[in-house]
Length: 153
Image (cartoon, rainbow, N blue to C red):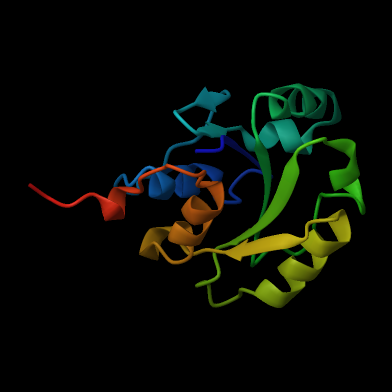
């Protein structure tokens, strides 16, 4: 499976999505440092929100095959600059989270992610596991067996 690094501001849903991708029960955890899992790298929001820490994200991105830029559907603004995806020599995908919120505007979030240069956009509600399998399928490489394909014995 391709390794995915998740980037976004605090409370964008990176850790919740990480838990959903891993098939774990969703519990709130504030990410304090960069967490490495088998195929997921979860980063603290402060790294994306602080210029000096943002440089570290550029370095961590080299340890991944795919960069995921998260943007919650209820965000009032995007912290990503236009055409930022050209700064990374990796696949960059947009991930719109919190699509289930009453104040969600997924179309606006998608527009902002497309302005960054993201060509592939995923829409997820991590707590309901909506859209999570689409991301897993995207990360799949030839020969990978997905958890739902394993027959119970």
